[in-house]
Length: 246
Image 1 (cartoon, rainbow, N blue to C red):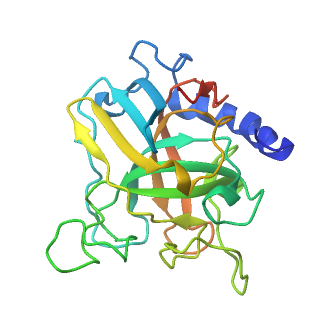
Image 2: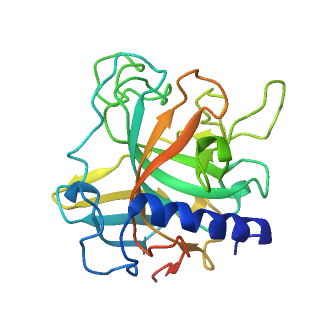
């Protein structure tokens, strides 16, 4: 379960979620109709066991993954679109220091930069030009009023700090991991398979589903990456009601 301070963060950002999503709450696995953009309007979200893997799955009212940010031509101020599973897993589960914030798994697209330096997703021989393709991250989220009242950011790494980081950390000054798990998109559904062994104990894991737009700071300084616009939240209030299905 989340530590007490994470619970406070979730409560504090609930108001931000309701302000930015602007719609009534619905449970995990409810009817659609929350988000203005159908491709980010969550119908259901789940995490299920499949042999030695966990499958993170989200269904939407439109076509999953079809809508991507328009390129701006520069990193500063650029936009990231994301399908996100906030979890109750400790940040240490994927290789960060313990108790750093809300550990979330995400599929993202952002045409103005590439943050998966180990992988060549489009197979053209260049590992630095495919940020627009949907790819996966583990991120640690925390509150920062500089991103907006009650808003979250991907936590920054202060200059000179030496935190514990996963082996596939992409080199950005953020608590972010680029593990290389490939999202699969089929009409209204986006799914990602993750080896259970990569996470440790997961039996007590709780989760939620979120679609959101993030924004890179115009000055490319901390806070570097803010959650700028919440499109939809499966629970409506980030209460993490989802439980791992057997």
